[in-house]
Length: 155
Image (cartoon, rainbow, N blue to C red; front, side):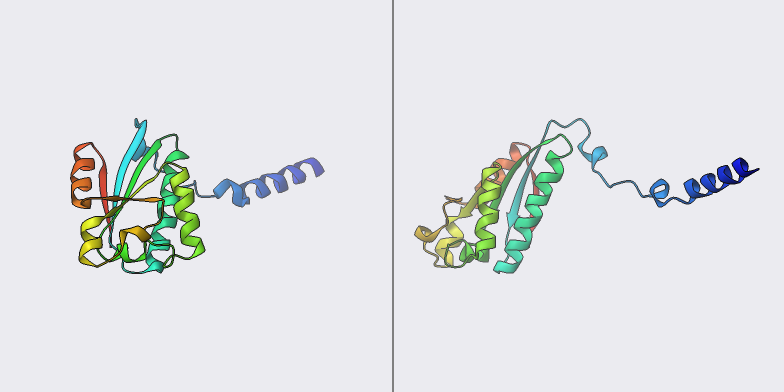
Protein backbone atom coordinates (compact mmCIF):
# COMPACT_ATOMS: atom_id res chain seq x y z
CA UNK A 1 0.00 0.00 0.00
CA UNK A 2 2.80 2.41 0.91
CA UNK A 3 4.57 1.58 -2.34
CA UNK A 4 1.42 2.28 -4.31
CA UNK A 5 0.93 5.68 -2.59
CA UNK A 6 4.54 6.59 -3.22
CA UNK A 7 4.16 5.65 -6.86
CA UNK A 8 1.01 7.80 -7.18
CA UNK A 9 2.77 10.78 -5.60
CA UNK A 10 5.74 10.37 -7.98
CA UNK A 11 3.44 10.12 -11.01
CA UNK A 12 1.57 13.24 -9.89
CA UNK A 13 4.85 15.17 -9.46
CA UNK A 14 6.12 14.11 -12.85
CA UNK A 15 2.96 15.08 -14.71
CA UNK A 16 2.81 18.45 -12.97
CA UNK A 17 6.49 19.24 -13.45
CA UNK A 18 6.98 22.56 -15.31
CA UNK A 19 10.01 21.11 -17.12
CA UNK A 20 7.78 18.62 -18.91
CA UNK A 21 5.49 21.39 -20.11
CA UNK A 22 8.14 23.98 -21.03
CA UNK A 23 7.76 25.66 -24.38
CA UNK A 24 10.38 24.66 -26.95
CA UNK A 25 13.09 27.23 -27.64
CA UNK A 26 12.32 29.28 -30.76
CA UNK A 27 14.59 28.70 -33.75
CA UNK A 28 14.87 29.52 -37.42
CA UNK A 29 15.59 26.01 -38.68
CA UNK A 30 12.89 26.06 -41.32
CA UNK A 31 14.06 29.34 -42.88
CA UNK A 32 17.76 28.39 -42.70
CA UNK A 33 17.32 24.75 -43.78
CA UNK A 34 19.81 23.73 -46.46
CA UNK A 35 21.88 26.92 -46.25
CA UNK A 36 25.62 26.88 -45.76
CA UNK A 37 25.75 30.68 -45.67
CA UNK A 38 23.27 33.55 -45.35
CA UNK A 39 24.04 36.79 -47.21
CA UNK A 40 22.46 40.03 -46.04
CA UNK A 41 23.03 43.73 -46.60
CA UNK A 42 21.48 46.16 -44.14
CA UNK A 43 20.59 49.58 -45.60
CA UNK A 44 20.84 51.85 -42.54
CA UNK A 45 19.24 55.30 -42.47
CA UNK A 46 18.83 56.28 -38.82
CA UNK A 47 19.27 59.80 -37.56
CA UNK A 48 20.61 59.36 -34.03
CA UNK A 49 23.12 57.46 -31.95
CA UNK A 50 20.53 55.68 -29.78
CA UNK A 51 18.88 54.08 -32.84
CA UNK A 52 22.27 53.22 -34.31
CA UNK A 53 23.38 51.44 -31.12
CA UNK A 54 20.06 49.58 -30.94
CA UNK A 55 20.55 48.34 -34.50
CA UNK A 56 24.20 47.41 -34.01
CA UNK A 57 23.08 45.21 -31.10
CA UNK A 58 20.39 43.71 -33.30
CA UNK A 59 22.94 42.99 -36.07
CA UNK A 60 25.13 41.23 -33.51
CA UNK A 61 22.19 39.17 -32.22
CA UNK A 62 21.25 38.28 -35.81
CA UNK A 63 24.84 37.25 -36.60
CA UNK A 64 25.01 35.05 -33.49
CA UNK A 65 21.57 33.57 -34.16
CA UNK A 66 22.47 32.55 -37.71
CA UNK A 67 25.91 31.24 -36.74
CA UNK A 68 24.46 29.39 -33.76
CA UNK A 69 22.25 27.42 -36.10
CA UNK A 70 25.17 26.22 -38.21
CA UNK A 71 24.92 28.78 -41.02
CA UNK A 72 27.77 31.17 -41.89
CA UNK A 73 26.55 34.80 -41.83
CA UNK A 74 27.88 37.12 -44.56
CA UNK A 75 26.88 40.63 -43.52
CA UNK A 76 27.36 44.06 -45.02
CA UNK A 77 26.01 47.17 -43.30
CA UNK A 78 25.69 50.30 -45.42
CA UNK A 79 25.12 53.77 -44.01
CA UNK A 80 23.54 56.60 -45.93
CA UNK A 81 21.49 59.69 -45.28
CA UNK A 82 21.64 61.16 -41.77
CA UNK A 83 23.50 58.17 -40.35
CA UNK A 84 26.78 59.40 -41.81
CA UNK A 85 26.70 62.28 -39.30
CA UNK A 86 27.32 59.89 -36.38
CA UNK A 87 30.05 57.71 -37.89
CA UNK A 88 32.96 59.59 -36.37
CA UNK A 89 34.72 58.99 -33.07
CA UNK A 90 33.53 62.29 -31.60
CA UNK A 91 29.84 61.42 -32.16
CA UNK A 92 30.02 57.78 -31.05
CA UNK A 93 29.99 56.66 -27.44
CA UNK A 94 32.15 53.80 -26.13
CA UNK A 95 29.33 51.26 -26.45
CA UNK A 96 28.89 52.06 -30.15
CA UNK A 97 32.63 51.92 -30.83
CA UNK A 98 32.85 48.54 -29.04
CA UNK A 99 29.95 47.19 -31.10
CA UNK A 100 31.58 48.33 -34.35
CA UNK A 101 34.87 46.69 -33.34
CA UNK A 102 33.24 43.42 -32.25
CA UNK A 103 31.15 43.11 -35.41
CA UNK A 104 34.12 43.98 -37.64
CA UNK A 105 36.16 41.28 -35.87
CA UNK A 106 33.42 38.77 -36.76
CA UNK A 107 33.73 39.72 -40.43
CA UNK A 108 30.88 42.20 -40.79
CA UNK A 109 31.67 44.84 -43.43
CA UNK A 110 30.63 48.47 -42.95
CA UNK A 111 30.29 51.04 -45.75
CA UNK A 112 29.51 54.76 -45.65
CA UNK A 113 28.15 56.67 -48.62
CA UNK A 114 30.38 59.49 -49.88
CA UNK A 115 27.39 61.04 -51.68
CA UNK A 116 25.54 61.39 -48.35
CA UNK A 117 28.69 62.73 -46.71
CA UNK A 118 29.12 65.34 -49.44
CA UNK A 119 25.45 66.42 -49.37
CA UNK A 120 25.37 66.61 -45.56
CA UNK A 121 28.81 68.26 -45.42
CA UNK A 122 30.41 65.56 -43.27
CA UNK A 123 34.21 65.33 -43.42
CA UNK A 124 35.19 61.79 -44.50
CA UNK A 125 38.50 62.19 -42.66
CA UNK A 126 36.61 61.78 -39.37
CA UNK A 127 35.11 58.41 -40.34
CA UNK A 128 35.84 55.67 -37.81
CA UNK A 129 38.34 53.07 -39.10
CA UNK A 130 35.82 50.19 -39.03
CA UNK A 131 33.75 51.88 -41.74
CA UNK A 132 34.93 52.00 -45.36
CA UNK A 133 34.02 55.00 -47.50
CA UNK A 134 32.44 53.98 -50.83
CA UNK A 135 31.50 56.17 -53.80
CA UNK A 136 27.76 55.51 -53.63
CA UNK A 137 25.90 53.11 -51.32
CA UNK A 138 23.21 52.70 -53.99
CA UNK A 139 25.89 51.05 -56.14
CA UNK A 140 26.75 48.76 -53.20
CA UNK A 141 23.10 47.83 -52.70
CA UNK A 142 22.70 47.08 -56.41
CA UNK A 143 25.90 45.04 -56.54
CA UNK A 144 25.28 43.00 -53.42
CA UNK A 145 21.65 42.30 -54.34
CA UNK A 146 22.82 41.00 -57.72
CA UNK A 147 25.27 38.74 -55.84
CA UNK A 148 22.40 37.16 -53.90
CA UNK A 149 22.39 39.27 -50.73
CA UNK A 150 19.01 39.87 -49.08
CA UNK A 151 18.40 43.57 -48.42
CA UNK A 152 16.89 44.81 -45.18
CA UNK A 153 16.08 48.50 -44.79
CA UNK A 154 16.70 50.00 -41.36
CA UNK A 155 14.98 53.37 -40.85
